Image (cartoon, rainbow, N blue to C red; front, side):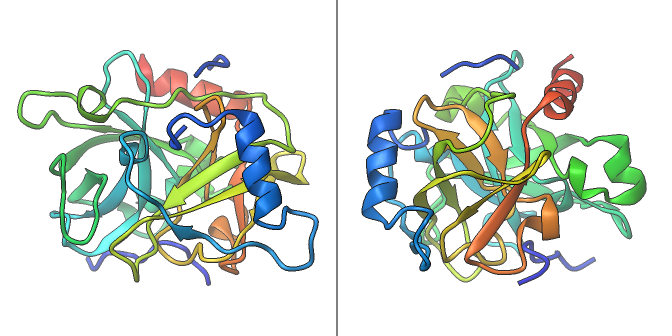
Amino acid sequence: MAPRPARPASAPRTASLTAPLSAALLLAAVAACGGQDDRTPPTAEVAQQSPARDRVGTLSVHTAQGPRACTASVVHSPARNLLVTAAHCVQSHEVGLLDGLVFTPGYRNGYSPYGSWPVQSVTVDPRWTEDADPEYDVAFVTVRTTGGRQIEDAVGGNPIATGQGFGLAVSVTGYPNESDEPITCAVKTRSQSPTQERFDCGGYSDGTSGSPWVTGEGTVIGVIGGYQGGGNSPDTSYSVTFDQRVADLYRQATT
């Protein structure tokens, strides 16, 4: 299952996409799913609609029904217009920036409750631009206003958190290309390397790159991407560890 996205043709600790869940409740959900230590990983299920989950949406070309690229989510920023996703979702080393992308938060079964928000700018690390280095597979994306409002005014935004370590309970919500509804899973993060992390849950196929990893406190600590472009198997997903690299990139995107 590589790459995760379907290519179109042509930082402080603060406050879940799950409404908000406490860390204890997320840990209980992980245990109910079988946890991360069993031989068989859990499988994602359809994500029930909630205002907090509506911060997650599709990245597609020109319209909500256009070719899908990936998943993205709204994060808090001073200008209230910022998304986070994987760098490979918005910029290809071979093609450059992907043109005509729109973000559709809360998309379900052809319905776009908040409309679509055109991508305005993309911030990625130069090491991604030059070499597609998986250690820098994170992007911050600004979107234009729609109906006179910023995206965060419409759906809210989750804070970015860095330096949180491994072994955290998170919920991960994203959009497989073959589905018109998002999926979600309550899992626990694990170390893949000092600078990459992983979780094990089935169902995260093409289109789920960029899906946010959200703690019980409501902070985004990862996005599907990084090692193997987010994972060669739908049962195991990866993220760049949100550390000083991501804090610096966020600062660049918001100043």
